[in-house]
Image (cartoon, chains in turn blue, red):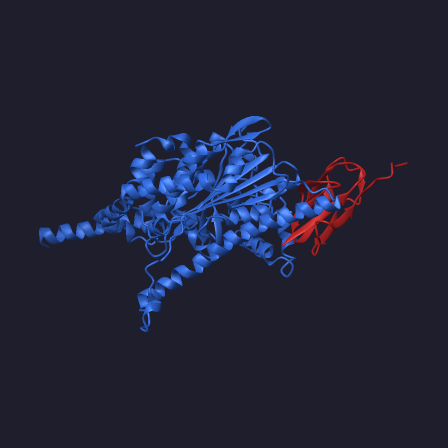
Length: 470
Length: 75
């Protein structure tokens, strides 16, 4: 055999061995469910963040466009103050929960981990993510022959390469244990989509309890990769599961919910999905982009506004409202949705081609669902306002809460040209610096110009149980 | 669908729903439609011990009323 052939065979054998070794990083099993430990809302009690003012932020998907818009909103909250009980309180410090998907998850996770360091001009978040060509980082890794061998393994995919990039650039070895150790709010809800159930999968310990997985063993970079795991471009992200090995006890709400298929199908299916995580043969969960099940990141907030117990949704805001803990509820929705303004099918009698048809199939249901999600939140808050008024009139004693719904989205822009400019920004992990600057600026402006935000930061007294919704 | 529950007891006490603190007696609380197990926080000086109820078709002005009474002191 010639030396060249020997070398080729040797290289092939080495690559095959390497491929066999490459696998996704395994999540560690949870020895025992302990609600007093792990990344849970109840374990994050910051004295400086009271619950009487309860602030929820949701950051949508949309690549760097979404990350930059959310960043601009955070910058404004950092510089805003609200008065509670005669004391000025910083609004950013008052944020209790940030729920995010996809591009928005980068901003949420980095802020959760590094707090005000995210705002450092030219700092790591700006330099290595917001203003960086992250797509080139991903492509370079994909084109490296060393990684071709790893990608030949059935348990190592393109999403693992992406995770490595996010780890190297932004999150290092940080895991959810670092967030839990910090013990401060906001509570992060980094959302992905469970392929099997088609439902939202949130990286919090209570979601992983029935799987007997220790969230503390999962790197933050992995959760963000799952949340931004754009289908086809990346491979599904796999998590281990160890059902039945940690003494998990099913909470009482599940049995009650399973009797309500006809009266409350939404609750019924939440319970069904919950039970499926406990099925002994399900040793793995496969995750896609959080945007597939909810591209606004608002569904957890809707669940928290409906579920009356902390077992059903561990940070149930309805529970806190019913227990008269919350006096003022603020929900700020940051929606970086784009619009296909180039669609001009209707100007021609010709049938649109397959590419456009596929694009419509892939994006239209998601966009419609997102629209409905936002409307559902608005209706839920409006129903609460009506209930409070009716209860007040009837003297039935419902706790009166001031409600604020604030929407930050490009369609709020009055100027047609400006609105279209932002709606045309593509969903990429690479945007020109001037566009990132403009997105930060417009995020800040849209929030500052919201009448409800102005009312929130400007008023001294409560609004008497009314909903402000602009 | 938002539904409404009012738990009546001679004292102001925490109401437990599905095994955890969830509201206060004498005040209307909001829940999602469906079945719930309702009881009160300790001390266990009330009866019945718990009540399983389906909460549907209620209004804030006409909630489902669940009543607990003080136990007779044991002789």
